Amino acid sequence: MILNQSRHSTILQREKTALLIIDIQEKIFQVMLNPEIMIQNTIKLIEGFKVLGSPIFVTEQYPKGLGETENRIKESLKDTVPIQKLSFSCSGAGDLFEILKYKNIKQVAVAGIELHVCVQQTALDLLVGGFQVSLAADACSSRKEKDYNIALARMRTAGVIVTTTEAILFELLNVCGTEEFKKISKIVK
Image (cartoon, rainbow, N blue to C red; front, side, top):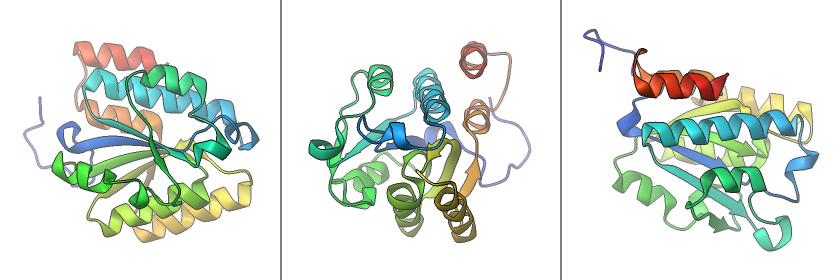
C-alpha cells in the first residue's frame, strides 16, 4: 500500500531497492570498531530484505587473503553467492553495477567494511552510476574511529544518505499492520 500523497524522492521503495553487503569477512571483521553490533545489524538487514523479497548482493575482497564472508552472515545469506573482487570499489566486482541496472534497481542500501575504503569507494561510484545510496551507518565499520567519522562526513557531503538499519527497513515497509511489518518488527527488536 502506498500513501496517497507525494513522498520525498529519497525514501526507499522496495521495488527499486537492493541491499549490498561489502566485504564483511572472517579475517578482518574482528578488528573493526564494534564488530558485534555491525554483524547484528547486517543480519537484521538481510532478514528484513528477505521478508520483503528484495534483492541482496554480497562481495568478498580478496578472499584468499581475507577469508570468506563471516559465518553468521553467510548462514543468513544461505543461497547468495558472494561476488569476489580485487578492486576496493564494487564497481570492479564483475558486472554487479550492470546487474543492478538490469534489475531496474535505483536505490542501494549499503552495509560493510571498511567504511573509509571499500564502502566509501563503492558508494561514490554508485552515485556516479546514477544510483541513490542509503548507508546503514550502524551496519558499517572501520578499524579506527577517525577514519569512520571522516568517511561518513565525506560520503554525506557527496550525496550519500547516511541512515540506520531500522530506518531502512521501515522505509521499505511503508505501512504497519501487515504480516511483513510484524515479521520485521520482530527482526529489529
